[in-house]
Structure formats: structure tokens, C-alpha cells
Image 1 (cartoon, rainbow, N blue to C red):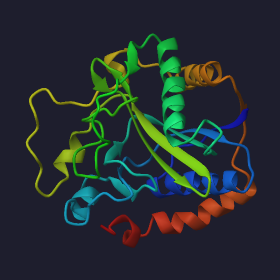
Image 2: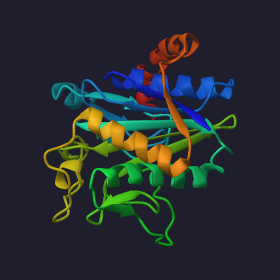
Image 3: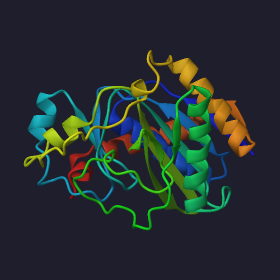
Amino acid sequence: MTFRLLDTPAAPGAWNMALDRALLEGVRGGAPPVLRFYRWTPACLSLGCHQPARDAYDPDALRARGLDVVRRPTGGRAVLHDRELTYSVVVPDRALGGPRPCYAAVNRALLRGLQRLGVAATLQPRSGGRAPAPSLVPCFRDPAEGEIVAGGRKLVGSAQVREGGVLLQHGSLLLEGDQAAVRELLRRPPQLDAGERATVLRDFRDPLPSWEELTTALIAGWEEELGCRLQRTEPSPAEAERARELNVHYADPAWTWRY
């Protein structure tokens, strides 16, 4: 299998979500599957598709900190996107065996890339519990089965949606900093548990690898684990145009603050 590889410039939250969604529609229309790496500017709080937010977060407080805010097309919990690498994968839902096998395969591929950098990461073992429901708990607090962990804490947080026979999965690898603002921006912030902090790559690789070194390792891990080829490219003209249309939707406060 050949995947298109996109390494797109840093962009606002609405554009990043619009492009992921446009790529999903492109693959649904017959385009090859995609692995995309991207960044965010300005820093952005992203909300899960069904996460309650309207009565939880103060938009004025977000603006005062210079933070963007967007609601993702995928589920999961709030993430502050700042100093991180974000990935997205768009693939026909049976190409990697369905939603759960796809989730596992993507995490294995990312894990192999991180291990190439000398990061002592593993996959979270089966716990017997159910997946966490949408809530105000920060995404990086509780690792789910199969997610990448290091030092016993979640290192990569991911979310997934299936639509029209196509899977979109995207997730964040925190490079440095923390997720404290996710909690602090709540109208009624819960008390921080002793020692509770998001795990970041700098905890295990200091100095941090350059963007090129990091993406090169993840690409090699992807090709090794999945036995596929990645071909560098750009979004098609049709995908770029569709992303411009969808940007209006993801920038609309009616979508962002719908719950």
C-alpha cells in the first residue's frame, strides 16, 4: 500500500481540522490514503466532537491568553496544541482491518518511530475498562488501551472517526510544555492531583530532535511496521478548495460552542 505523505505548515485550528476533513472526503472519493504531519499557530485548545464546553470554558479567557479554540470532527477530550507534532491518518476503513485494528496499527507504527529515536515507550496494556466518555478531564491524564505511554504516562493522545467507509485518526505527540491550561481555563477548575502532569518528549529526549529528525524517524517506523511506502505530496487542488470551504464551518462559533 502507498500512502501520501503530507507535511503541512503550521496553521490555525479551523484550517487544520478543515484540511483533515477534506482529506477524508478525498479518500472517500478514491484518493490514496494519507499520513499527515502538522503544527498549530496560534496555540489552540481543541475540543472533542461531543465534549461539553459551552458552560465549561470562558471564550474571553481563551482570547485573553491569545489561544485559538476549535471543535474536532473526532471524539475524545480537550487538548492544548502548542509545542507538539500532530499526525493524521486517513484510510479506507477495511485497509488496516477496521477501526480497532487501525488504531492499534497506527500506534504501533508511531511507537516504532519513537523507538528509533531512543525513546523508551511502550503500548498501554489492556485494562478491561471501557473507553473514557466525553468529559472535562484533560486528554493526556488517562491512557487508553493501546495508546503510547512512556514512564507510565500517556505520550501520544489520539482520536478517531469513521464516516462513509473511511477512517480519520489524528493525535498529538507533546514535545514540551504541559497541558495545565486545559484545566486552568475551565470556569470551575478541578483540583490538580499530586504529581499529575502530561508527559512530553523532552522528558525522554533532551535536547529535542529537530522537526526533520522527528518526522524522518516516524516515517521510517511507519514504513517498517506497516510494510508500506510513503510518497511526499501536497493536498490535491480539489482537497485544498474543499478545505477552504470547510474552514468556514470549523471557524464558526456555532459549531465550536454547540455543546
